[in-house]
Image 1: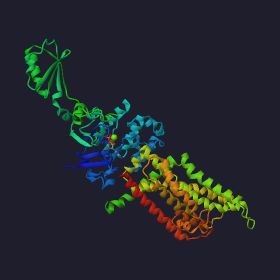
Image 2 (image 1 turned 30 degrees about the horizontal axis):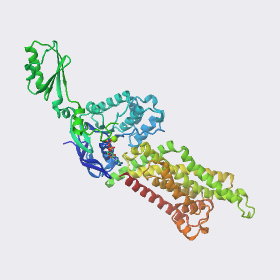
Image 3 (image 1 turned 30 degrees about the vertical axis):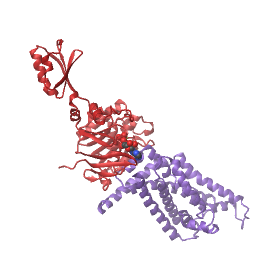
Image 4 (image 1 turned 180 degrees about the vertical axis):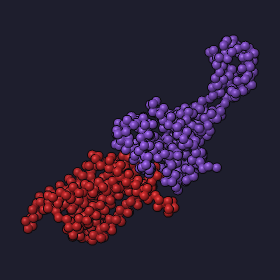
Length: 320
Length: 265
Ligand SMILES: Nc1ncnc2c1ncn2[C@@H]1O[C@H](COP(=O)(O)OP(=O)(O)O)[C@@H](O)[C@H]1O
Ligand SMILES: [Mg+2]
């Protein structure tokens, strides 16, 4: 079996009375885009700080491409790019100097270095500002520069702590595009987010973390399936169906049928089983199907259920 | 880490240390608070002593001019300049980098902690050597200073600068984002050193306990070695001065390395 990019076993971190991480285990195969989704204070940043060797865990182990992060810290870091939670660029250096300093810190070979730095600045739409001090950059520009710095050493594994949190639309689009391109190039991406839609859009698999514990790990689609009863199929016919008849009520696996405007919605645990029954019904009744939409539960539904946020929503601030 | 990996890491660490030092030079050398603490402070200190010396009631001996009296103070000025300028970069830069979170970059890079501590110290060292050359040259040009052994003098400046910048880096390990907190601790160490190291007040006129403390002050050996560079006279011994300064450097570096690791947990 190939060595996973990240392998974490029973990782724990205690800060005095606070159990920031509570025996977390997971493994990220090389090439995967792995999302770490959780509300503020869940332990996302703590996990990244441990995996990058900044903070020591109080228990458990973490391996990066097979290297123990505590005992082989430097070796583990060689193929790693890090985008910290705060856009930590040097305000008093230009965009170019920031990139080159990072390259030197990571021992990037001189051959090809400047070309790659230039390409990164172009990718992140910063090339025109390359000789300007980062001091004058907007929040989005600093974030993009931080990402460019995280990629300067051609990492095989990129850590990103809330890469798009609170950014302008243009920066968000660029960053999402880059994450997709990295996935295409086989780079492993570990990103944290409290944005469910982001996890849904960009990640192969998502771990939902809350209070330092992992509540679930799976692909976004499969996570949604864990609360299947909320799925539904929405159908629009060419004629109004005056009343919902038995033929519609008795479709197996349908829990509830509801008329919503000029459409009918079937709540079900298994949309794929419902579709043939609807088509058959339409043929029998000489109805034409104008629209057919399956609406899964959103990742948000999963998230709320797994973290119990709806029932304890005034315990702490949930979203930034 | 096994031995081979350790050896392979040495050149990588050195180049990273140099990159960190250069970054500090670009960003911090011209910062106002560093100029105040590294340049203006020793200058005012010197002026205070100079006015005290010239205005003092001691009768001029054998036609000693005021110029020559001032010139005689230059070795002492060099010693405190090195003390203050070498230890003025990291105690400012490191808390700022903690606040701006750029420090996270440094401590998450594929380099050893020693490379970080050394790189930070190098920027203070070069700053201090550069600043110390100003009074040195002025002394030679305008105050008639003669330098018997320029090599020893330069070695004294370099070793002492590395020693005090290592001390500054060590103090800056104190985990705070507030420059003032580090500066308070640092000044608690720096000010007593001025008076207990034979810089302006000769060791022989210190009380017994003062002489005992001076023995543990690196500035004592700095001052002694600088004087030896100027006029070949030394209370201690230039060889011993060099050895003790080297020991302080290694001690500060190693202890700094330990504290950065410890405070990071
Ligand atoms: N250095 C620290 N000292 C004390 N508590 C901390 C420290 N860092 C994080 N914590 C606590 O650990 C928990 C997890 O924090 P964090 O990992 O930053 O959460 P997230 O990134 O998911 O918002 C929080 O309760 C936080 O207050
Ligand atoms: Mg966080």
